[in-house]
Image (cartoon, rainbow, N blue to C red; front, side):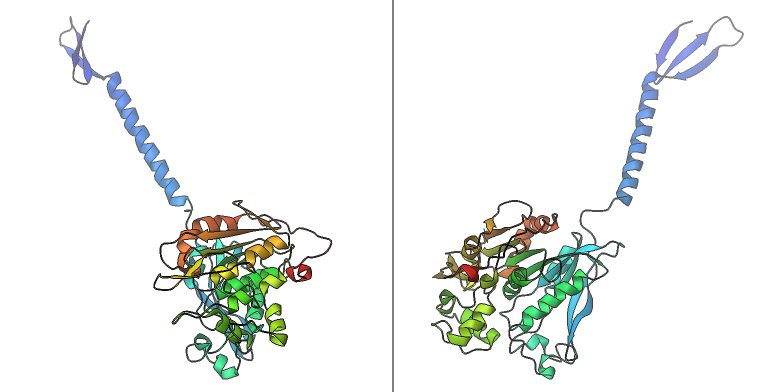
Length: 386
């Protein structure tokens, strides 16, 4: 007996029989190749099955549902809610729109964006100071602010934000945790509730302020700023919001000053407030560096340089003065705050730079909520101000 190699098999010849018997036996090489093909097929099938059942990191954006969170004199104050219908309860992210305290629409694109990252995204509207066109009928469902003769002066706007926080904290779709994300005037409202609210009730658990509108409504540096055509003027926006006369370039006095102080988040900040993140862009609008507490230039909408602003009475120095700690941690820490100047190439205000910062903001607002610190007595900026 002997073997002759032929192609993929071995020919076995048996001599001495009346007829030559030939039998082709598969080679070892052939067996290995078939096994490899079979194994590759099984791996591909398993991978495909896993891909079909795995939940992607980004969820499919849900459609927004407009609902009423509050009724004032028959007027529905609404929100657009984006929630993943997965049967689970989600942390709520309330998105509070900009608009100089007198305009603006629900910031639905940001709320929908947040819903893809595990949040119940809630874009709210709130009553506005005059002319409040977006809240008037017929733009707003009847009755609007014009129909109920409501001009949305302080404290009505912050009352609405407060009620939104309470409403959605107790919503059956919520896990009881609420984050506030505000741009410009909405940032000011977010900080106000972070400073005045009660933990577990109307205080957000975390707050993000993108270009906080005005944090200190009595700041003489804010009132001294000269208005720019076609730009929101800080002191006229404050006067309209507070329903007082505009004494610029001088700050308000007497009862108007007291009202401005009562409405100022910086005057109400204290060491027991929730962690917050204040930011403005490197080329932000007039008054925003002053409000945030950065001594940098503001910029005009045509990208020309504005004045060098004085932030000595803004958020950052005030927070440090009352004993809050500036944090650089990736996760929120009790008794601390974050402050960032976002580097941009053209004038960017409020949610204009959301896409640039969300990759850092979303992990921060998704992290575990730190326990609130316990202090013997709350210390506010006003209580230590001589």
